[in-house]
Image (cartoon, rainbow, N blue to C red; front, side):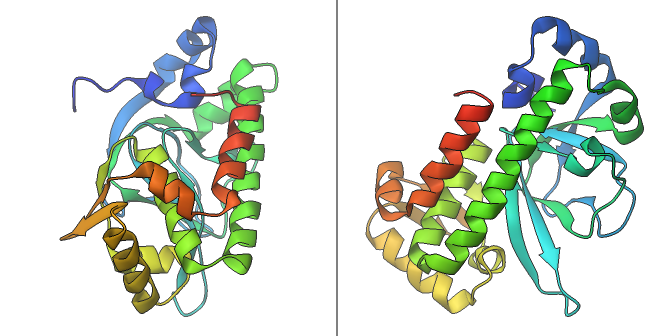
Length: 236
């Protein structure tokens, strides 16, 4: 485990008072999240909740054919385990790590016992849940109304925010699955964005070269999602 890892890399844990942080820290552990590691499966009991540190988790929905589409992503700003917070034990979707890294893990049964309506963490996670709902709603609107290029740039910016570094492993096939479009369309858009000098893509590695350029090429959805998070949780 890298020595520089700190639970306070997660923005939710950073937002806690020192007393609240100390209250819950005995119940969590830092664990690695491998590429495509399943954190919860459709209609199966959820065993753990996760506060992500430097990985990116995709929340996806599946159909009967096995096709998937991403509905939200969670990185260092967030928490995987909203159904447990809301009193459920499972959900029909799936969550897996799309970019490997680390997270703080807490057993779901302990979380349910300790994170009660009287705690600061409970109130904070309710506000986070609203930001997640906002992200899902805005992303659904974006996927219906905006071009593949705008959506691609939004997805890159959100991933860049969540992973916290300029280079990360990513394939065009995976991006196509997440956006719910054909790989050929993603290849054309990725080539256009690369020629503009905003990204570099080589051998499954994505590098963000010009973040301002990506922001100029995306739609208003990215800024709306980020602004709502800052309003409800607090700025970086």
